[in-house]
Length: 173
Image 1 (spheres, rainbow, N blue to C red):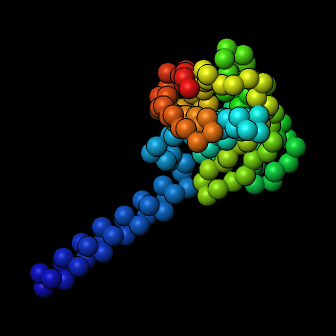
Image 2 (image 1 turned 90 degrees about the horizontal axis):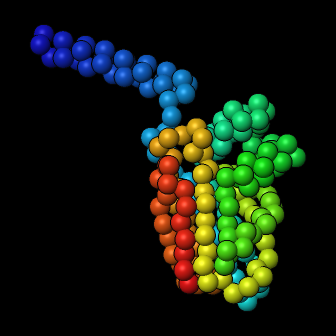
């Protein structure tokens, strides 16, 4: 008799747990970590600068909606998505090399699981000695946002963690 009551209580708790998990999967409970990654690759042999920004897809779509009132679906990969991402990221990611601001050209994006990689490129005009980065991606909407910055000069890598509100870092090579 005692064992039967234990099974009943267990079944009730499991049922409640299942209902809770089912409901929370659709009610917009956010993921627990807000981390973006920005990779800056400086190739002096090719005189190229390549930038990749990895952001949570849902967070990026929400930011674009809140700022531009445009409901975008990054799965569609249309010109509206390209234009809005280009504007949003270029307003919040600034890179200077040897105190000269870099003009980033948007080259596209790709989805990877729950993340979106946005790509930019530019030409290198001089041997990089100092790389200054200002990155406020998703800071407007997510106060717990952290952006990891990885800067590569050829094969040498330097990294730094920017946690909102800190937004600037400099790398010397």
